[in-house]
Length: 314
Image (tube, rainbow, N blue to C red; front, side):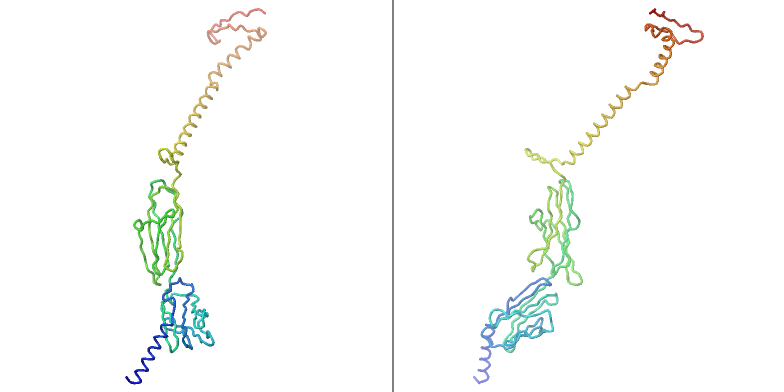
């Protein structure tokens, strides 16, 4: 074996030893757009001089072992000294979709390691429409829209904090020109009792899903504990209103009849007036004493004879 081959072998062994000591973590990182992305590069027991960070093959930050972080034209990147002399944290402060790709730590002339960065988009989620009102047994359709997500979000329905089986609702998705997804789902719920209906959307980088909710109110129910029979109050209220209206009509009819019976008719008024006018002269002639037994066979007038009872003396 010649000298050149020996040197190559020794150099290869040295590089492998350094490579085994150099670490870049995490190997894969997923964040939501706008969040920080942090990678740690450590190379203990190595005599590196310059550490260069590359984003998708482009150098964005340089660190000198002696001086530290050198000025960068990219204000969105920086580095922090980690525990230990030979460990640095690369910080991408405000991640964008175009940052997705490879992040590389390059120890100049020694070795390099590469990790993967994924940037996701957090969109919005909305249950279409307002709170609902339904009768028991009625089928109600709910629609949920999750718009502006990347990648396609996972969508779920919960009713009264219980997860709905995916077999009970459908999901359709559409991709826009900016590689953003809109997911639509429809859920049919049979109104059994008042419920809280929630739609949740999430991607892997979100610690807590986004959610939107509406309230389903079933028409007030009366529950009979003995036979567990439920009667809608709407029916009871309707019957009560009809009975009240009928009672009001009966009272009105009875009041009207009573008033008509108490009021004297026109014929009664005529006879009463004639009686008073006929008794006037007699009362004057007799000094106010009138024979109550008086009777007449007819009205006075030409050709008619009026029979009168004698007036008793005082």
